[in-house]
Amino acid sequence: MKKFKAYYLLFLTSAIFFAISFLVYYKMTFDINIYDTYYVIREVDFYIMISFFVLILGLLYFILEKFKIILPSFLSKVHIFGTLFLFALIIYFNYNNLFEYQSNEFLFDRPDYNKYIIISIFVLITLQLLFIINMVVSLIKRMKLFRASRRT
View 1 (tube, rainbow, N blue to C red):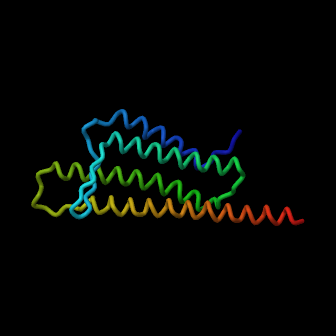
View 2 (cartoon, rainbow, N blue to C red):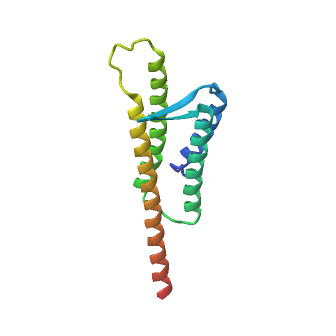
View 3 (tube, rainbow, N blue to C red):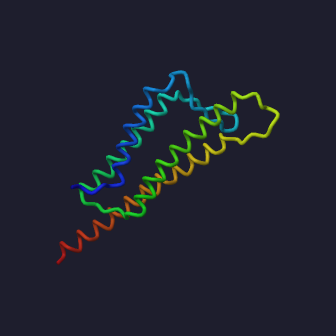
């Protein structure tokens, strides 16, 4: 029996997000406000974008495994679980932001979920950069080992 790899969760999550994209009401939007600029994405497109992004990450891990390029297990798990957690967090904050704006409680202090969404996106981008650095370092180590084995 094959051992369960953490990146299999990426394939499963990709399929789940793709299925959710068909279940979301087509007029719902994902809104981000950065100063004077509003970024508005239909939720259907947002879920499809997440689905394809997670699928590409899963395929990268699969290709790296097939070429026997070994990434540090701890960093890979931090990247995979961190990415999935942050996508779930962004979706959670978006829905809370949506429901907060629909309520009539304008007099009370409410948390600014838009700020949390921006911070989550920044941390998500940082995680992806760490994955690229991790991949490059592993490729360099493999090339050094390959050159050392050819000399002997």
